[in-house]
Length: 170
Image 1: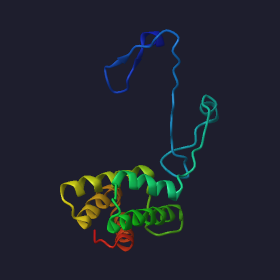
Image 2 (image 1 turned 30 degrees about the horizontal axis):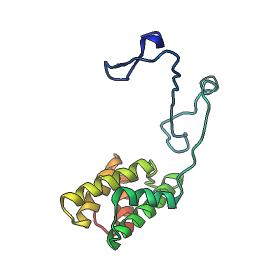
Image 3 (image 1 turned 180 degrees about the vertical axis):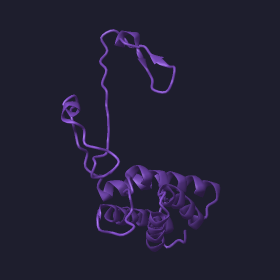
Image 4 (image 1 turned 135 degrees about the horizontal axis):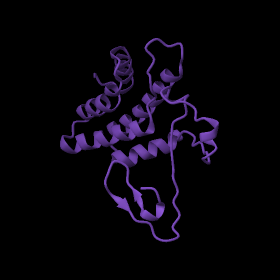
């Protein structure tokens, strides 16, 4: 497809979205900066010149806590509220491990908001299926945090960190 008047093809599909006459198209691209993800490079100056850049600062702990509470819906259960506080602490410690260059077996990626939300969503699903908090924590943190690290030594670092903060054996 070469002309916008013909429509836009959705990536990885055969679907074409037809555009109304005079409509405006906005293309949005996102990326983590290289200091957050060592697998990305800075954009070249000519490429960067084609975009309006906006850096979004990390979400505050208070907003992150509200987001996790919204996702999990703790209903004032002290054990679930403790788990949410533990996730926030785990996020801080995982980030500190990632950003510490001289640390042996440091985590090779921080615990992102996306990962925290995935933990919360998985925890909620497990709790709906079987309301055993410890098993839901084991599964959600094991699959959405510990399991994301592919190097066995780094995975063990994540496991020890989660064990110590959340008080659950993984």
